[in-house]
Length: 85
Image 1 (cartoon, helix red, strand yellow):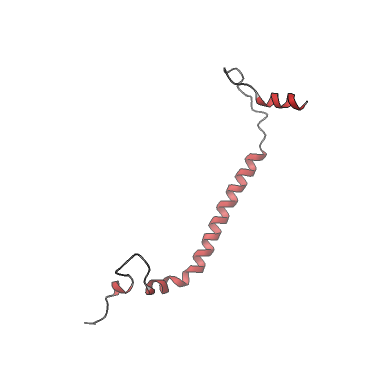
Image 2: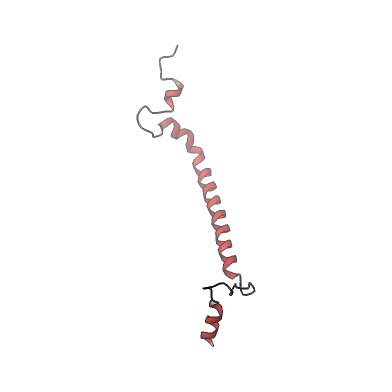
């Protein structure tokens, strides 16, 4: 029988929720790869979001008929066109 700390105790700390030095050394080789993966995922997500916003901003809804027969609804686009002329 060995008189040292058990294998389980080596990777955990008895007080608090922090990482033990052994766990920090174990995770150290993966830090750069995890950071690059994070940057890649954030870049992809941000790109899709930006593309979606730009695609919607360029869309022209002038061909969509407005329901002007509903009570209380008026056509704002015609008002703006009349003011500009």
